[in-house]
Length: 470
Image 1 (cartoon, rainbow, N blue to C red):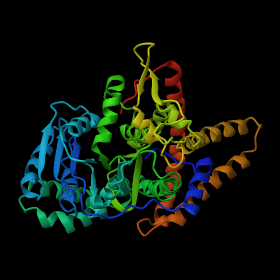
Image 2 (image 1 turned 60 degrees about the horizontal axis):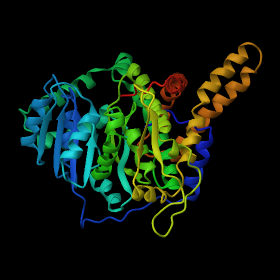
Image 3 (image 1 turned 45 degrees about the vertical axis):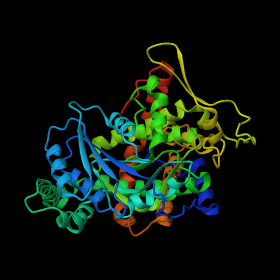
Image 4 (image 1 turned 180 degrees about the horizontal axis):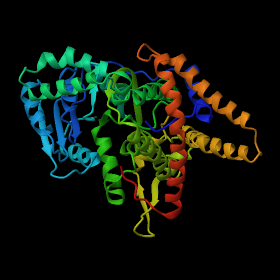
C-alpha cells in the first residue's frame, strides 16, 4: 500500500475511467511449462505467526519448489519452530540465519541471486495465504514476457480468520505435541481472552476496521481502475508477491553501487517503480486473498509515513517515469525516438551526480507500456496535497479569510465519496456498516501524516539528504 488515497482528486478520474471503459488484462491458465518457484520468508522473532505462513504454503494447489526462511537474527523460538515444521510439512524448507538483523532487502538479494528458479515468491512472516490457489493464480501472468511481479488482494488478519485457518489447516497437519501448534494456540488464547471494551482495543480492532475499508478502497477501486487503464500497477503489495527472479536481480544489480540496500523507506515501492520504468508490469490478481497482521496505533502512523514517503522518494528517483505523459513510438528495429532514461539522484556523501543507465533492449521494452504511468503518478502526487490544503484553509478560517462551512463541506464530500466508492465495489468480505465509524475517525486522524510526509521528504530533497531506508 502506498498510503492514503484521496477520492476527491485527479487520480479518481483516471481510476473511474478505467473501471467504466477498460477491460481487465486477462491471462491464460496453463499447467504446461509452469515457471519454477522459490518462496522466501524473512523472519525476525515471529514465533507466533511463522506457522501460519509456512502452513499456508504447504496447502497450496501449486506449492513452491523450495521454501527458504531467512532468520534475521531472531532471539525467540522462531528457529526451532521453522526446523520442526521442515520435518512436519510436505514442502522443502531450508532455514538460513543472520547473526544480527540486516533487513528484508538483504535477505531478498541473497536468495534471489543464489537460487535458479524462474520466480521468487516473497511472503512476510506475519502474513498467510487464505486462498489455496494463491500461488497458482499468481503464476498465470508470468507466462507473459513483460510481467515482473504479481500479487493478490490483502485484507487484515482478524481473530476469526486466524481461528478458521487454525481449525481448517493447522490442526490437520501438526501433531499435538508440536511446538508450533503450542504457539499458535497461545496466540489464539490471548486473542480470545480480550473481551469487552478494553478487549476491543487490545485486539487492535479499531485499526483492523480502519484498514478493512482503507485496503478495500485502495485495491477494489484504485488498483482495479489503474490496472484496467494502464495495464499495470505502479508497485506490488509487498507482503505476498511473486517476482520474476531475473528481473528482480537486474534491479538489485543496477542500483547496488549507488543505493546499496537502502531502496527508499519502502523497498517494495522502489522495486515496483523500477519495473515500470523499464516497461515491465506489476499485476494484481483481484480474486485470490492473503491476510496480513497489523501494528497498533503508534506503528500505524509510522507505517503510513513509510508508505507515503516511499512513494514520494520513488517518484523523485524515477523522474523520467513520473513525468512521462505521452506514449512513445517504437521503430521497426526495436529502437525508440526518445532519449535514454535513467535514475538520477545526488549522493548524500558527495556532490557527484550518480546515474544508472539502461540497455537498449530495456529502453525498447519501456516503450511498450500501455499508457504512460506519469499520468497516474503526477495526479496522485497532486492529490496528496489535499490534507495540507485542508489544514491551510482551516487556518485561514480562524482569521476570517475563508468560511469554515466551505471547508467542512469539502471534507464531508471527500468522506462521502470514499464511502460511495467502497459501497459500489464492496464484496462479502467487507461489512461496511460495522467498519465505517472506526474508518472515518482514524482516517481523519491519519490525514495530517501525509502533510508531515510531504514536508519531510521535500525538506530532504532540498537539503540533499538521501538517507532513506526502512
